[in-house]
Length: 270
Image (cartoon, rainbow, N blue to C red; front, side, top):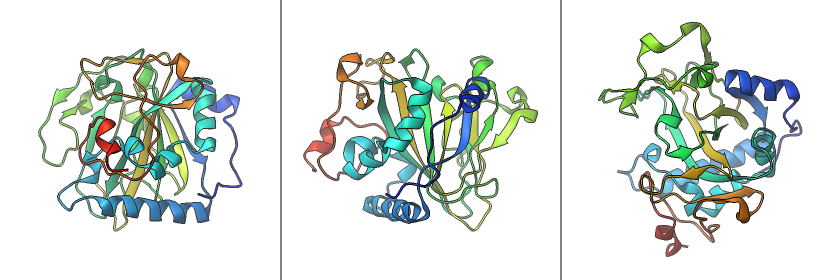
């Protein structure tokens, strides 16, 4: 996919902002032509799924699809992540977050680190915009600086429009610190695993979709008793630094149909 002419590295003020606020946004990656290619890529993978499978409920695309793996390993994306995590880090998650026009789907306030059995907690999520995203079509919203505050209390909520069944209630949210992560198609944001975030319903007549890539430093170890399916792919650095099982690079195109699958499940489809 064609890269933007505005590609660069993070500057010192952005790295300082990430440490202080837990996020950076509007980083250029793909050109207009690259965005067109990205949208074709999204539609191709989405249309592979059986009609009864919600793309938002699938994960592990980086272990199943060589095309997805290649996007997740775009050198310019990895350079941004390296500026935050250093030269040795791995990829462990790849997922679509899609809301068609007028979707009522809501992602409640939550911290990813609450769900992830990874120690220490130091993962970075890349959110790549496939279409322009803003408040009207359900841009991700974050609470600036919340990654430094505490572990927030999550309670169960079975609202049928919620993608997650746990939420941080509004009483814990500092409304003055809420920021909507508006992005142009082809741009990315970066956010900390401990940052409070969520998204509202899509009230517009436009689709909204982002791809998330999850990266962690090589010294971060997963609890395989809780996540036995966990395996990683080296993003930068060497295998010798990792403490986790290593998944192969996909040789072809398979399609995940559940949230969590072992990488061996895809190998027979390549």
